[in-house]
Amino acid sequence: MPPRRRIDPAAGRAALAAWKATRTPTLHAPESAAAPDFAPVPDRTMTATAVRYALEELAARAPGRSLEVRVPPFGATQCIEGSVHRRGTPPAVVEMTAEVWLDLVTGAVSWADAVAAGHVDASGERSDLSGWLPLA
Image (tube, rainbow, N blue to C red; front, side):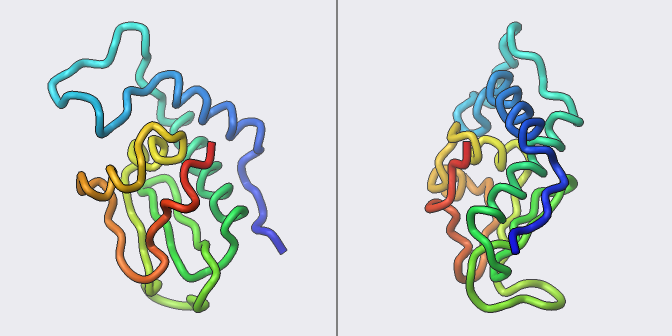
């Protein structure tokens, strides 16, 4: 049985599109550069919707419970087939900020670049999400 969706897919896709339209990728923007005048900063509600939708989409495309993907403070999901995790810390965990997660989901940044830059904390088997990203 597929995981239950909490975010309406249409609202989630709209939030991802809005994110993509208003963002300069996390890893490619010079640290001192200000956001362009035409690109408003994504608001918290839109960011939360986009993150949660993308987590649900990953779980739908890669069902399982062997890897936990965490995007604090907005959400987490378990995905990828393999050993079943029941309690405590899962054997494989991936954690990152919402900005990095959405840049990965939309294809603005590659998995390899995000990991190499230290923007992704990944440990354990099956923690490489390069085969599943981007989602959008």
